[in-house]
Length: 224
Image (cartoon, rainbow, N blue to C red; front, side, top):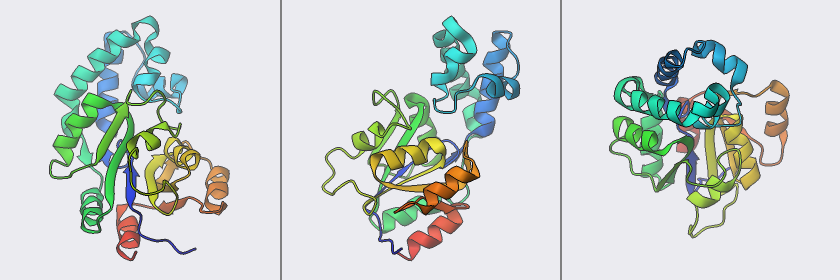
């Protein structure tokens, strides 16, 4: 199948553009200790709903104290652990390549908005995104298609697989892309995906594209 240069790319944040695993894990361990909970490695296996954001999972971990616990998590993350968040290898080069090719850049994330914006200034201070959507910017987050349509509202082109690519590392991202009717692009092995899912989505018409990393993706985009 022949692909053309997209007019826009919508990018996930955590695990796609930015490596935040240590930052999230350390902040979760901190707040879990405050409430005498089990460590993050155990809690996420027992209680995490992979279809929800970090914030959306806090009621699973903290019950009625979810809002209080998240406020403590967010403050500690922003003040202490966020400094360990770094751009994924090749991410900055990809963003600059898109700018050079006049491909509009968007962020569509389920991350808490204030943390998303703070991390953007830390990791990509020179990059201009058309819009950055985070948790709460739409009534439903990914895997709903709502954030895609909200991000591209007012675009002067049709929202199609030819024009728009959605890039992410998890099933939330690819399910969102298929629901919105845009090109799903998987970066890496795919969080919360089994091989049957990846095979079926890749084989579908305008099926999911998969790249090991930004190096592979950059090579592909450069040839369009």
